[in-house]
Length: 318
Ligand SMILES: C[S@@+](CC[C@H](N)C(=O)[O-])C[C@H]1O[C@@H](n2cnc3c(N)ncnc32)[C@H](O)[C@@H]1O
Image 1 (cartoon, rainbow, N blue to C red):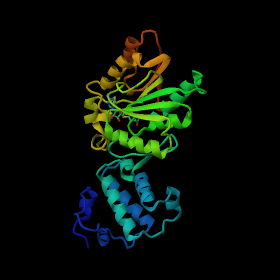
Image 2: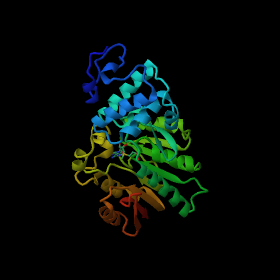
Image 3: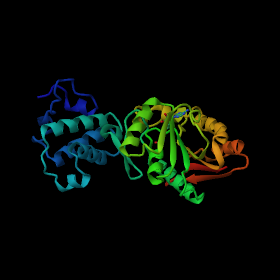
Image 4: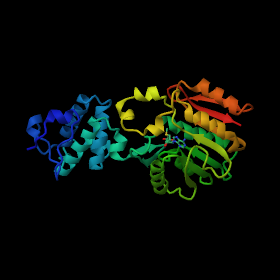
């Protein structure tokens, strides 16, 4: 029997600390014990709906799949499989975290990006699908410039979990990549990913402000720096606002503080005919294009959309 109420758990309250997390009071929710997969999912979806979580079914399945080390299709194929007490306790704890709006990738500790599995935790931004487009544009640029055969030099500024640097390194085995971040914590996560995905020989992790730590000019500069305005960040969903690192998101009053500074430094760090790729906010295309013209008066500038048709990437052919 537990001494914390079903309702309080649904509101996201943690169970009292105990040497061993107790199985919830099943009679209260009218479910037989031990629960099977279908019942556990039903319980979780109900809890997440009440906690106002956006995708309750998907999140419940991902969390249960994580606990059981099962794929989602296996959950559908074996709904009558009973959970052990340990699995149920682990699932309750995971659902409870999600009820408090902690993002699923932080709960399960990883996120797929560009077909690779990356470790993530609260020290880094959760990589977004839009950023996969940035990687695609990097690879396209390398092809268009005819750099594929040589040791292309790339700098990923604001590397976070290292997703851009690692994806570029795995796709371009001859490339040399500098992965820069001002957060030593984020760089520890990037180092884990670099090692797990076996690209240590190609990537050098550098800690510092923007381009300060870069030892040489590079052919390609790519940056997904903070670009959310401080006001928008305060108004963002709890999942983002309460859990993701502020330093990865907050771009100051108009969101462009970091991008503005990077553009001032970029001309002295790009090799002859080098290319700069920036991820930007949906409403920032014209303003960033204008800043680019000031920093690179003779450059060709492209503003490219994301999957939803919003401005998302600025490419500068210097
Ligand atoms: C939007 S996150 C991008 C993370 C990762 N590249 C991605 O696409 O998922 C921005 C990253 O830039 C880093 N950052 C913020 N300001 C910086 C600065 N002045 N110099 C270097 N890195 C910075 C943050 O620590 C954070 O990891």
